Structure formats: C-alpha cells, structure tokens
Image (cartoon, helix red, strand yellow):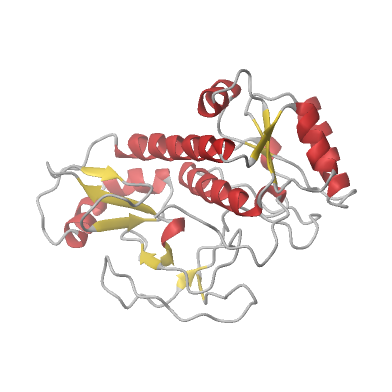
Length: 286
C-alpha cells in the first residue's frame, strides 16, 4: 500500500504515464525498437518509463495483457513448470518460453477473474496445457519481495551497503551515498536526520531529496541482511543502487505503490532521490 512518507521523492521509480512514446537513450537520442522474442512483433511503441540509469537499446518484451512494450527488466516473467503450472519467474532464469506482464496486481486480478489472463497465456505458450494458480498474484508479490531482500543481502556481502545511523550519516555527508532507505516502521526523527545529512553531502539543501521508505519492516530487513535491528541502510555504489531500485520499482509498481516525483528535487537525481550519474548503466539479473 502507498506510504504517505514516500510522496516527496526526487524522481519516480516507475513513471505513471502509460501512453505510447518513443524510447530515448541516455543522451536523449531515439534508440531503435527491439522486437519481442516471446510474443508476436508489431506493437506500435513502448510506454514511457523513466529509467533509473538510462540504457540504450535495452532488450524489450511485450506485456501479454496491455500489449505495450517495455524493457524486460521492467516487466515480470511468467514461466511454465514441468507440471504446467504458471509460476512467477521474476529473475527470468527459468528455461523455456516465457510470458511477460507489466500490469499492477489489481489489473492482474481483474484479468484473471474475467478469463483474459488465461487466453493471453494460451496464446503466449502456443496452446500448451497450463494451470493458473488462484493465488498467482500472491506468489508474484512474495517472489518480488524475496528478490529484493536477496539483492540487499548480496549488496551487503559485496561491501556496497552501509549500516548504522552514525556510519550512514558520515557517508551521506561525505557525498558517497547513492541510495538511502528506511524500514517501513522506522521513526520519522531518525529518517529525517539522515535525509538532512544526505542533502548536505549532495549539496542539495532546501530540496526534497530524502530517503526511501522500503516495503520491508525492520524485522524483514534484519533477516535479509543477517544483522540485528536494521532500520536504515545506504548504498555507496551507483550500480548497486540501480540494481536495488530496479527490483524495488517493479515491486512498488505491481503493488500499486509507485511514488510520485518531487518537483523540488535537484536535477540529475535518480530514483528515490539517489544521485546516480547519467552514464551509469543499470546492472540487472537475467
């Protein structure tokens, strides 16, 4: 669900506009359309979706429900199990043919109830026998949350995450923080103090630059990172921030919790206020 504290962000993780527009590269130049290899080509154009780190000619796929194209890292892949069950494959690692969706959970539930999902999947999987679990939406959300938690754990082990209020504040003031996150049950006082330190380090005082309220509480963050009582975290690597915010954006979009842009944010800031350089490409899982 939307958390009001996430409203004043410097840039939206996922754009709200869904109309067709031309894709543009990191320098703002048009990039050629990439055909969808998992579904018939011929969709006119891709929806606008602001990139955390723009990447020219990113592989695209077509949403089987909306018909719109998007970068594959912005969609959710569905795959068939050996028994014919339709299951989420959020990291796109399962073998065989896949079907891609870019809709919200509410839209998916409606398509499932009206039988549109079954028809779209039948076409995508070329008539292969399939069974759609009644709790498919639950499974997708659980898989997205697990992928985000796993990614945070990987980044911590890689030395890309700083924990502890004092260490985060020092890194923020030094200008090396690219993403600032808080547990969903974090107190406003601590979050605001770290956000202020971040604005100082980014020379963005007086703007709306602030941290992101994560869709994970401190218990979930503590389990994901293998630490006790994790309330705040900071990413000190731009590519790591792009990896985390990529998964975070998909989760928030699917649950309908996409934050809105903050008009007072400094120019060039990335998702959730992360100051990510324009020349840093997002590194995603397959």
